[in-house]
Length: 108
Image 1 (cartoon, rainbow, N blue to C red):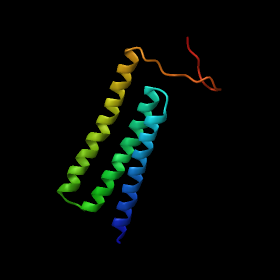
Image 2 (cartoon, one colour):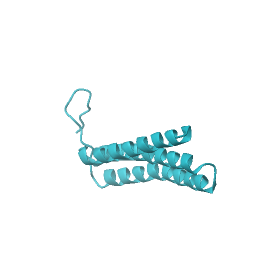
Image 3 (tube, rainbow, N blue to C red):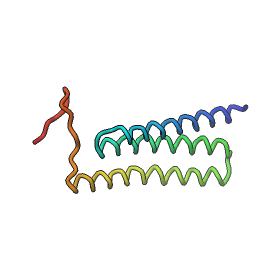
C-alpha cells in the first residue's frame, strides 16, 4: 500500500467514526438544540473527511473536482440548515433544557 492509500484509509475511517459519533449524539442528547449541535458539527467533519479520503483515492481528476464541489455545498448548507431548524424550533416555543448542576444558568 502506498502512502496515499494509507492516508485515504485513515481519512475514511475517521470520517465514518465521526458520523457514527454524531448519530449516537443525535439519539442520546436531551433536546433539539443539543441534538442539532452534535449532529451538525460531527456530520460536517465526518463528511469532509470521507470526501477527502475519496479525493485521495481518485487522484487529481474531474472526479476530485466534483467531490470538492460536494464538500463546499455540504460545508455551507450544513450550518445554514442547522441555524434554520434551531430558529424555527425556538420561535415555535421549544425552549432549551437547562440543567441544575453548577455552572448552569436558570431562567424564568
